[in-house]
Image (cartoon, rainbow, N blue to C red; front, side, top):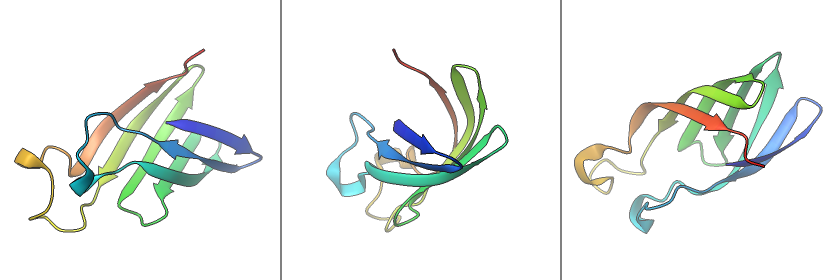
Length: 90
């Protein structure tokens, strides 16, 4: 995930590696920062998250909502709410 912040508004891009096109979660995201909490989502809301920012890390949850359950995710591993932890890269 790459992000750029202007005041409370955040825009960026999500790129998940190894995700097949049929349930591709990659794309632009936008969100807001309130205190140390960042809330973000894709334009179509199929990917939504909320993380707490602490120095060089962000951790929280992200929810993946497929276009259709039958067209999603072998083993359904990439749907529902998951734990997310990110670290700033140099």
